[in-house]
Length: 278
Image (cartoon, rainbow, N blue to C red; front, side, top):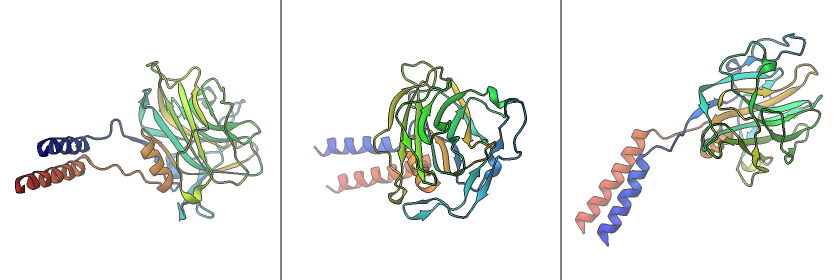
């Protein structure tokens, strides 16, 4: 019995040594790094609206999660675009897009995050194809999922002007199609208690015409009206655990493999010592 217990304990410890499959932070913005973004807005006549980052770093009235101020945040005004550390291909694990958001008057044209295939600023962003979207366009304020063909999910969350919310979307591949063809959507409006997953508002939404690779992220805020969308703790990661950690704190901490190994070996040594004593 002791030998069996030791074998089971050893197996558990050895599993702890192994890194989480595919865990990776592809993009993380705590709100003080507006320089990570570039302006990607061009109107239908080819006129470039705005310049630089398409957003500014703001400090007044920041987001507060679970009673903790998240500090600086981004005020987006012209569809700022940022690039992932590495382009990611479609898989069953997929990726998680998350952000804190607050819309504000006067206009309600667009808000949310757009995942794009581009790995550099396209010559004409009007031709950019979405891999997936969590947010809205048009004169409404309902957070929904969208795909490359601009189809949107029916279910969603209607956000009030000035309301702080957390948005989390999972884009993944089903049926080994080689594309990001499916999405789930979560919205949490109770930031006082911290961000949690709960039940998805939208589950298994089909992203028609989905893309094979995602290389960049664009924040929605139309410069023509004009409008402002406030964002913070913006992330693209590969696990739900990383996504929740980033939304709640602006930081994603992944234990180093060396640390996990030392902890596991220490535990294994303790078990062997106890066995010898007995």
